[in-house]
Image 1 (cartoon, helix red, strand yellow):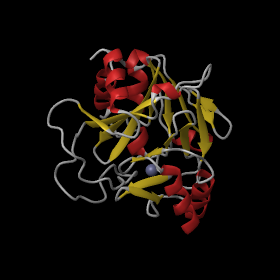
Image 2: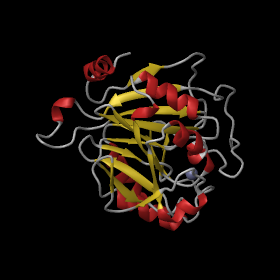
Image 3: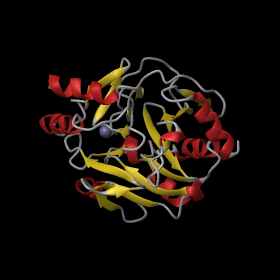
Length: 269
Ligand SMILES: [Zn+2]
């Protein structure tokens, strides 16, 4: 599908409406969004037989194109790439893409299918951000970096030594900008956990600093987080920010009213 058509498609769905693009065959709903054990790569729970190799994607614009500020950045369009129990995200602006997280080993093909569905390819991927070091988020980094030779990789400094990468990763944290988007340090789940925010489009890509559950927002996984006190402090930090939509490594995106939900969660911690 030509990119211009895709943009029209997205725009016509309007703000806050979830468009679902189905790529490939055998697409099924993700039966479980439970976090995968980062040490083994095995699902920690199994609620059904359908999560293997699902390549469902969901796409929406973060805001109508008309909200682009004069002379300012356009909001990124985003697409979720469901990779079994974990999700990666493709953020696109002006025919250029940022990939956030890379799934488990073997997941690069599903990310490629997502790019193809957006009318772009690996050559358009200029940036790759790893939200944290866990294997279900960095497992296909080698394949992604090989497929996208121009892409520069970024991660939180404390996590970088634990992330296998064919090219040197650039450390980022508070105050840094990647692809015109804010990086926010959210230590706790791992020491170097980071999130990505599009302040123009009102999108937060939360990695595992938050999780989606039952249509809402919950905190980091106590089972898989290094320091829950720190993880909860990071949620209070995120609660100070404004965003309409939050997307997660695990769980369904919350579209609309997302920062209010995170503020309510933070107040309960
Ligand atoms: Zn994790």
